[in-house]
Image 1 (spheres, one colour):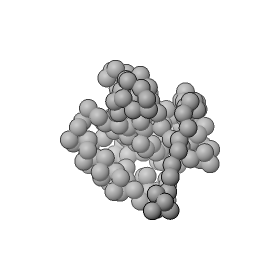
Image 2 (image 1 turned 45 degrees about the horizontal axis):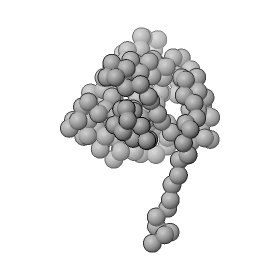
Image 3 (image 1 turned 90 degrees about the vertical axis):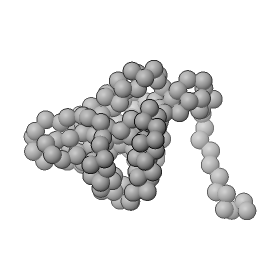
Image 4 (image 1 turned 45 degrees about the vertical axis):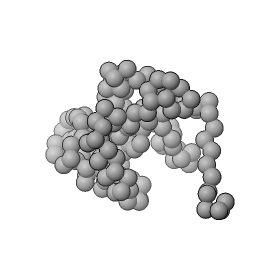
Amino acid sequence: MTSSKIVIRPMTGTDLEAAIALDNRITGNSRRGFFEKRWAALGGSPDSFVWLVAGQGTQLVGFVSAHVLDGEFGGTAPTAVIDAIGVVPELRNQGVARALMTTLENQLKGRGIVELRTEADWVEHDLVRFFATAGFQLAPSLALESDIVTHL
C-alpha cells in the first residue's frame, strides 16, 4: 500500500466487486450473494441503507454497510444495523475503520437515527475490541436461534 491519503465516500456500483473481494479475503468465504442482494435492495430503497468505502488512490481499502430498521428490537425509533465492515489487513490499526465508523455515524445522525447495532462472533477478538473502542456495549437482549431443520 502506498502512503496516499484515505478518502471515505459513498460506495458506487464500480466498488461492489472490490468490496466482495476484500470481504472474501478477510473472512475466507464468498458472500457474493449477500452483497449483491443488499446492493440491489439499496437501489430500490436508498434511504434504508448506508454503504461507504475507504479509498486510497484508486484502491478500495475498506468498506462498511448498514441498513435501517424501523420499530425493530422492541423499540419505536429507527435503528441502524451494521451488516459488514472490513479493512485490508495491511492498514488495520491505522484509523481506516474508525474513519468509516465516524462517517457512518454522522450520516445516520443526519437521518435522525440514534442507535447503531451489530453482531460479531465472540471469537473474533480484534473485531470485538474494535467495536468496544468504537463505543459499542453488550445489548440488554439475548440473541436466540433455532435450527429449524432439526425440528421438522
